[in-house]
Amino acid sequence: MARRNLLKLGEPLLRKKSKPVTNFDGRLGELLDDMAETMKAYEGMGLAAVQVGVLKRAYIVEADKKIYEIINPEIIKTNGELIDVEGCLSVEGYRGIVARPEKVTLKFFDRHGEPMTLDAEGYAARAFLHEYDHLDGVLFLDKMIRKATDEDVKE
Ligand code: CO
Figure 1 (spheres, protein in one colour):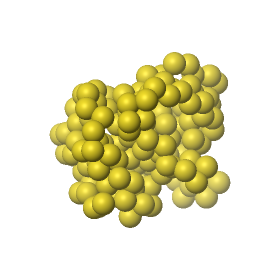
Figure 2 (figure 1 turned 135 degrees about the horizontal axis):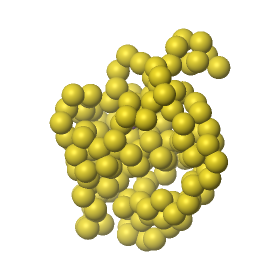
Figure 3 (figure 1 turned 90 degrees about the vertical axis):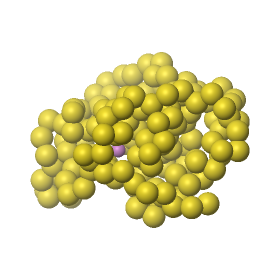
Figure 4 (figure 1 turned 45 degrees about the vertical axis):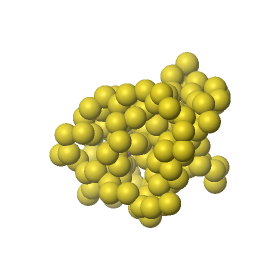
């Protein structure tokens, strides 16, 4: 495993649409392992492949002390709305207040190409949807109601 270079805001690749994963091979596994190491090093709770310069529809999210690996996801259903603070490892210096669905159901593949589904709610749902947006070149800045203040972050 190796930590990979993290792309920051202003890097054009972050605005590109990622392409579906077609080979569920050792290289994909290596990418996912490296992403996990990179996410931990930067103390993030999610990371998309594009953030380490790989335009593939793959991301990871840490929730319930487990790392979920999400490949070629599809959003099946969303429900409700929550407004909360979120940040991004590729956006330094501030976080934003963003409205997201409270619940999400995702269909995706694991690293071996097995089809999976997952239900998430609350902050985990936010993380799964934030990372999903990265696959389409969308950043939280595009959806942000306003920048978060120190007060918001404390809550
Ligand atoms: Co992000």
